[in-house]
Image (cartoon, rainbow, N blue to C red):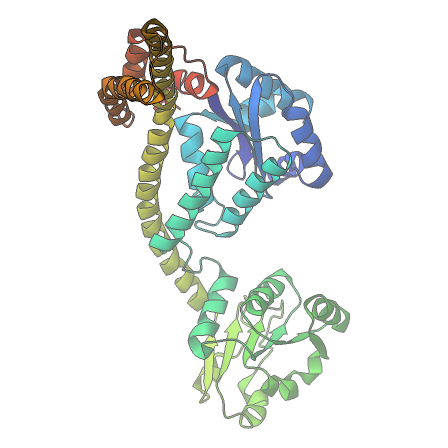
Length: 436
């Protein structure tokens, strides 16, 4: 048995293809019901997000399984050979494990270190269990991947530094005000950048939202979506004093907020105000930075923050890679025990069978003996057998963590003439965990 991975992501496919192959709801249920009954597939977990769709499959025959997986993608998902060859990546064993651990840690994301993917990995695993499509090995793999993702985020700063303009704006707001709960934000402009920054601020506790735009209807539409209030553009100078945070991103070719028009109104405030200008050309008069209590940031200020944070994330990513290598080794150690555990069980059973057979023969030859005498003889037989197999079992367990565990398991199997045909043993026997 092997673990296979076939998938595509933002690194290999344009958004049109990612949209075509993305699975959710009924389409995801349908694919699970089809794939889990493919004879060569022992287990299936599907990870599908806006940036990737990946199929993790456990199979006993790697060639048959890989062919069946390719055929399924070609026929059921209508992917031609050119797409399969140019955009689908195929990994197995070590490569598949390493890839999943990197994905769960945010190292393979469009935004390095983003944390949403960990929840998506967890949801994919839960969905596979709900569909009764996964199996023991894939369950352990995904549990481990989730654990690795948590560890990376706990022990490194991979997701603690903003690497987008909108997130950087939120970080700066936190630096100025600390807790954003109870704060009011005024957004000027109703475009995507404005909405994104506003959404992040709401997620971080901002409780009151005001939206203004030259088109009042667009302002009202955005305000309705985010539970805020729309104001007319000409009301800005008077209404601005209500805001603690102002984000401006319009397409104007002149300053939307000028010092001379705002100063009389700003003098009515005695608390700090953060002005964030993410427009090019700038919306906010730079002279406003000279007004007491005003903190002004423009796109260059935020970009500098982003670049600095990206450097920090890349440093954290190096730490994360080391953690992943450690965790892969630990997972491989667990995989290696699949050689040994069934052999140990078979050895114990073999010893017990011999003990029982010989004990029965001896008791029959002894004739009438008391229950106490029978118990003494039975205990003696068990003690002798247990001591005889004790050291071979200890040795096998010690070898389980080495890269030659399969050799020791095979020797023990042949030496003691053991019948070991469990799924776990056959799975491990066919593995080469250092190939990708």
